[in-house]
Image (cartoon, rainbow, N blue to C red):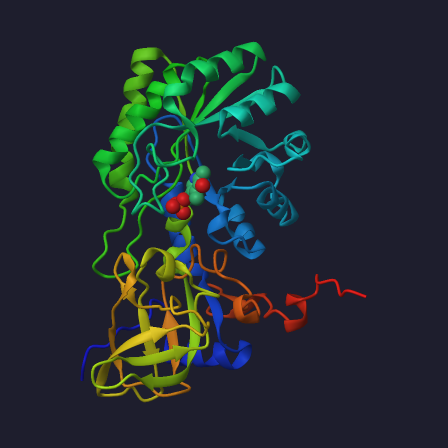
Length: 421
Ligand SMILES: *Cc1c(COP(=O)(O)O)cnc(C)c1O
């Protein structure tokens, strides 16, 4: 019998029960995996203290925010609305830091509630300075290098608009001085990946920025720790990556007398492999001897968009009561009327197609898309073709499945429309 892929944490029996209870497609989170990842992050090597934040844009369900909060993670929010959402979930404002592309109109109100703000552009810094002279602010810099997976995930270097370009440091100092601001944090999120030498370089570059601002007590190195979703991908060993960072902080302290507190804020690392989309095969079609065999699922870019925009690879498994002995190479298609709705693009190239070797499948079989915890439920073409938002379920450490988001009612999709007289 061929060695077909098996899901990370779902088995046929548990998957069947969840599908029967909640329907498909459904996001299924595994609490044990979430807790293990949180523990790793909270153990990140550091010299003078650590604050670990969860970059909530990866998956902002309140149940996940609360779970991480209970474990000791604080929050990185990427918009004013994420701040509101975290507060609504019960997160105390002083645990929330906002680093955003769009400083919201109500930033002053959020700041007065107690959140921290990292200015991510000169304009943001000026707006803050006008309202809050003399107060504490963080500065997000683009230190001039990046290491994201590709052009669309790179968040450092000249082609990225995130953060204040490092060469504008004199302008930053001028604004800080003119409003008597206290710049207490430096923030650099460039997607440091899994290579310890990149970490070393990034922490050295970031500490040079810290050196320029005498009030800074904290350095936030952001997130971006690569996770192996597929067996052939490289994951990050946080101990290995963090050790040289802690060394750099110690060297800096010896040299300057300043003991800098470290912050990290992963999203992907905490979530990626802790969730799967459980779907059903709803059609099987062929395009002939020179074409492909397609499995069409009852989910697609409405739940998992990453393959369509990055050529991202997600493990895919078919679950059957009696596992098939024979296999076939299948292309996996989503349910949207959009040719880009493909779950099996060529690795790293959404323009090209690829196939997966899976057991001979039939309509009604369960299909598991793994590695779907980060940037799936939170980042999809929600409501395209008027498909309702899929439910989310959390399997607790005793193996019990709990609904943490209901399946959306179709009427809710058009609830905000206003009919003309
Ligand atoms: C998105 C984001 C993160 C998390 O990135 P991951 O790649 O998911 O770890 C951290 N910090 C900031 C400022 C972000 O925008």
